[in-house]
Structure formats: structure tokens, C-alpha cells
Length: 375
Image (cartoon, rainbow, N blue to C red):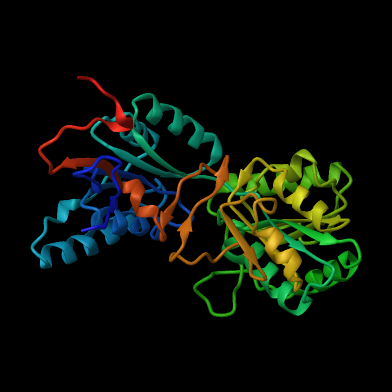
């Protein structure tokens, strides 16, 4: 079904082929913030590659998993395939741990925090299983001196405020050329004050609630820590009520502050100055995660250096668009503590297969590779 390669053989009368085969069972553990899309990214590609999937969603989003599994089963059975090719397991950390340790799960795709991802990775690799990790991202947008601010402001608002800052690709750091920082802070502060907070099902509301009370406490702790370290709360910083919080901009903290370097899953944006392009790249790359980065510039020199080997070290490397809203036609995933896994497009399908290199001798001789004489 999926194409391999024909490789020239160094031996006369021989042919080499590369074949791709199903792994068997793919386990998928997804997070609360995207309770649907990541499973479908995995299931679609895994099933095309001939695998069955077992899905465990977040304990706080069980009904989403049930609804999606029923839809998938209806489609499979309508096409005379077993609905159980996409199976659902609901539960807490104990269920996830069982999947991690189960040797019959040939590949485990895990979406979650860096901390838990490290534990999952060690255990799966300990049983020599295959692994896809989609972990955290302390993502940044860099703003060069020639940036189009009319494009930048809505992009930053969407990337930092959308989904109440609870995307793995949310922009959490804004690195601004020193010549523009005052103007950028001014424009963003004005834009943030216009953001409507409330039920995301109601038209016009742009910032919904945080997922749990623990997330609200994390938000409050980060705001208090920022203030104690000398940071300035330019806008926001308050709990509106329940799990609704104000999108917040913080300035005045060093770019390498422990707080800035730590991902807080809430709508908090740290803005910091940079001297030049090289400084922006250095600040962008200094965090432990490497999921998504973007730069706003019109200079070809900056653009191609940014996407080159000496530029951003993230798996998603954008220009003049936000850090979030990735298209699934490309491979989705990140580097460093983001885990190195890839889902969705490009050649990410190869992770859901086992590869076999086949050498076929169609001659009547038995020449050895590298010209070895064993006679």
C-alpha cells in the first residue's frame, strides 16, 4: 500500500528492495487540551499503514473519546471492517501506565507534559518499544526591526490568548527588537484590553476558561512570582471568576529567568528585548523545549537564516505567522524536550511501520558483498 524503494545492488544479478509493513497495535494517549485532533492524526496514519489503535484520552474528557470512537466504529463497520480497529480505554494514570508497559503495544504515541513524557519514554524504551512523544513547548515569536506590526499584533493575540493559553504551540515568549519594544508593548496592551472573556460557545468571546482549578493556581503562582522578581504586569494578572483568568502581559524579566524558562499552561506572555537577529535566535533557542518558533520580518536574509541550520532549533519553524495553528500536511512535532516525535503529514507515516531491507539474488552465482572471497 505504501511505496518503498528499489536500491541498486553492488553485486551483479542482485536487487535490493525496501518494504514497509504494519507494526500491529498502536497505543495513543492524548491530553485534555486537544481531546480529538491528536487521536485522529495518529489513527488515520496508523490505520492506513495497516495497524489497529488503542486510545486513552484524558480522564477529564471521557465523553469526547466515547463519541469519537462510536463515529469511527460506524465508518469502519459500514466498510466491512471491525469497529474494534479503533478501541477506547478510559481511566486515569493507572490505565496509561498499563499501556506504557504492555509489550503487545508496538508503538506508543504520548501527548502530555515534558515531565511525564520523560517517564513514559524511559519505560517504553526499556522494553524496546517504539515511541512518539509530543510534549511541551515554551514557544517564542521573534520580532525584527522591519516587522509589519499590523500583522504581528493579531498573530500574537491569537497565539498567546487563543484556547486560554492551553495549546502546546501557544506563544509564551515575545522577543522584540529593542527599537520596537515600546510600540509593540503599547499595541498589544491595547489589544489585550479588548479581548472578551467568557463562555467560548458564545459568539464574540475570545478567551475561555482554564481546564482545572490547579491550572488557575498555577496562573496565580506565576503572576505572583513575576511580580516578586521585579516584572511589570502590563495588562491582566487577575482571576475573573471561577476558572476564567485575564490574558496577561509581563515585561521587565530577564530572558533567562527561571520563570520565563518554565512553561506555564495559561495565557501569560513574557515580552523581552533583543539586540539583533543573532540575539533573537539565541534567546529563542535557550529553552529546553523545541516545538514551535516564528519570526516576523521582511528581510530574505533573516528568513532563510531563521529556517536554516543555524536558526530556530524547533520542529515547527514559521515566518510571519503565529506559533500555533500548524497545518497537518507537514509533520507535526518538536525537538529537545518536546520529544522528537512526528505526527500527521510528510513522512511521519514511517514511524507507524517496520522497515525491511530485502536483497534478492536472481542469478545463479553467489557473490559476496564488498567483494569478499570466502572460497
